[in-house]
Amino acid sequence: MPSLLLLIDNKFVNVSGIKLYMVKNVVIFKLKKEVSPEERQSAMQAFKAGIEALPAVIGFIKDIEVGLNINGSEECDICLNSLFATLDDVKTYAAHPAHKAVAGALAPYIAARSCVDYEI
Image 1 (cartoon, rainbow, N blue to C red):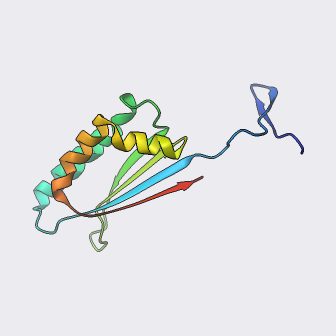
Image 2 (image 1 turned 180 degrees about the vertical axis):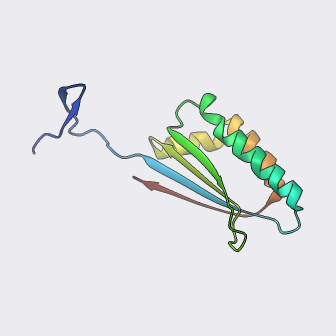
Image 3 (image 1 turned 45 degrees about the horizontal axis):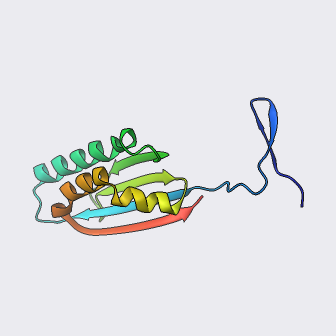
C-alpha cells in the first residue's frame, strides 16, 4: 500500500493510517409560536452568545457557530454548526455541564429540534 505524505512546515510527514476526517454536528431549532418577538430575540441572542463562548470552556471544540434565521418565511429559527474530531467528542460535548446550562436556558422556548452528525 502506498504511503500518504503531507507537506507540513516544509517537511514530508507520513500520515498513512491516520484518520483524516472530522465530525460535523448540525442542530436546527424551531421555537414555539407563542413566544413573543421580544422573548424570541432575547432567547436566541443569549443562546448564540452562550454557545459561541463554549470553546473557552470545552477545549476540544474545533469550531462552533450559531446562525439566527433572518428569513421569516422559513420554519426554523436557529442553526448550530459545530466541528469535532470524533463522534465521542460530540457526545462528551452534549453531556458537558457548560453545554447543558446553555441548552437548558433555551429549552423552554423550543418547539422542535433536529440534529445530524456526519463525517467530513
